[in-house]
Length: 254
Image (tube, rainbow, N blue to C red):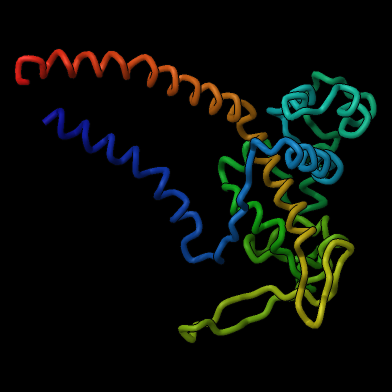
């Protein structure tokens, strides 16, 4: 009986990581694949710059320190010159000066800390969210989001992306679904013969998403590298032992 209960617990634990993303997006819009790579240090550096210059005004990352950015190939001088606010120290946490009461009054809700946002939402969600803003005159900021309906956050990247409108179309099964259409190009997007070219904007949002994922577990790359070394070491160590054991076991048979 105890073994049966133990097996059920293990099965439930293994199924939980698979089930959670399914329920998180059940009934919602289809998420785009972020296709991130936290071993791409150039992408992480670009994402860190976008985060520091655009997101860190309202969103803190209190579990991240500036000197941790040296792990993605930035020097202390680069971090101080390009990513840190005046007066901050290299060992400080990535906090903001805006207090929670003012933030709630201005935006209707306190902007969340983004240290672990990628671990709670997922890379695909964040990538789709960052690209999912559209014009909505009914909202206080003039913007809404396909992934997060009635979002309080304004579209801080609208000059890069331009303006999108929400369209209702019918899919192949005849069901209605929402779709975003670029109607006004931004500095990083183009409208060519009625078709939208958003490759450069998408790349920057992928870089930002990549950095947010990295920030959720900065040691992930090193942990993976150590894991590969351990597996190779165990393989090299165990293979001759297993081979000798096999020869010893089958010696009398042959």
